[in-house]
Image (spheres, rainbow, N blue to C red):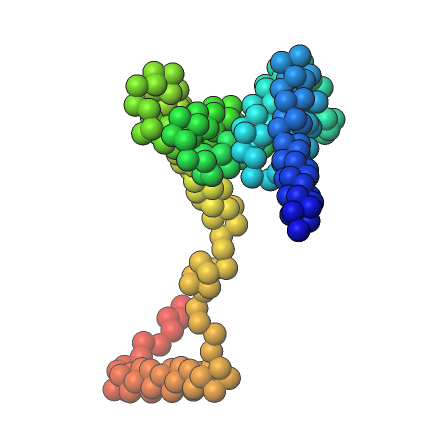
Length: 248
């Protein structure tokens, strides 16, 4: 009986050891990703962090580090240090897509962990990624969330002020462009009205069409009016002496 208990205990320990080793696999992969990142192999590190997340999708440290790797990759694409993956894209447009992927990773972390310091850093980095995309509205939102958790963070405060200023400039330019577009459209309409009056105006300037019966009634009325005028003229001429033609 004691031997059977020992066998069961040993089997249980082996299972625990195996599960523990399996559970640590994502950490080993993360460590390899960190080595690649600090060794300057940024794109390779991003791939490794993704492998860590495959081992454990809720390993948010891998999400955070993946966000860092993607952010740095986007910055290198934008600066020209990394060639654009698709020749049909510009460096700015390609970098913007990768910045967006980085922001997604930071947002996952900010909405999933409980540590206030980690959440604050995640929202700060989210704001930075959106700022690089020139998505100033979401950048402002991210910085504000970070400042609520750490109001003394001067870097976040400075970035927030910068993003707010750029957002106002962007909105001002958008309103200006919309006004210019409306003015141009109105000018085109006025030009078309002068050169080619629209059908509605033409219809309003033309007399309404008459039916056959209405036309006949109008003609009869004109004939009757003409006849009356003729009779009246003849009646006025009666009793008046006509002057004969002069003769030599």
